[in-house]
Image 1 (cartoon, rainbow, N blue to C red):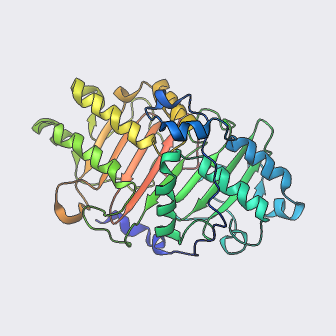
Image 2 (cartoon, helix red, strand yellow):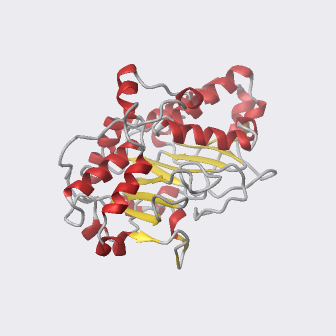
Image 3 (cartoon, one colour):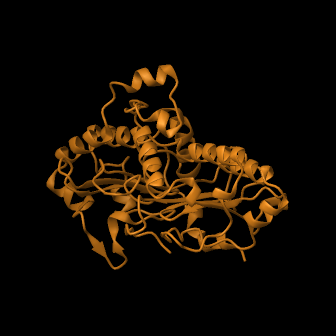
Length: 352
């Protein structure tokens, strides 16, 4: 069975690069970098110190919106539709609002609002990743602008609000910790099809493939019995990222059973996974994981199916704990689904 055939809509691309200027300020909050395991270069760190926080920029954007704009892109905190709570939904290629008329690079927003939106978006990422994020957007959607849209839930400036940007291979959030108990403001998604829908075994140019390379390095560190335990024949559907909780049935090898050097390398994999995001979100993800028992409560599984090139470098793998799911699907190109909370009772509108 080829599970990736369930998402043919991922082939759809739209738009061209409509960025008006490459002005984006560097992300703030470097204090949590050590805890998250990622330090900015000195030059980047100096630039980050005085950068405004995305939450403040969201508030400024919200205040600038005219009534007719709010009507189109603003929703109540608990807004639901026929599929449940809209604020916590995650998909691989989607838009909460109309993509053709409300895209962030079009005429719906003023030039000042466009600058704010772009600054919010890039400030949600580690500055060291900005060039890679631009490459992903260029390859997948013709660049930043026409193919991305935003929605705002609640009222920025109050205790409950969330900014969500969506598009092809994109769901990212800014919530100022309004969404309690969850990392990243809720489930997020990232992906990349660097050189077309069907990538080669080594995924040339894919900015996220190094995450899988590192995970597969750990697989080579396992002995024969460990590999048998870690390798699973059939992968779950990629979007199945709901929480199983303590005592859940997990596939793969328990991290708790790994040797000291293998555990240390697993910790390094985790740091690589959170690295693209701003330091405050990295730290929040780490705190959520620790609250559920840390990596020792997680399992790591590699999946035999859809091994591109049949080279034994596993394109699909998953790190999963009671309320932690990081599912990496590298066939036919990269899709990554992330759902992290500090306890399994947290409800999100993630599939599964």
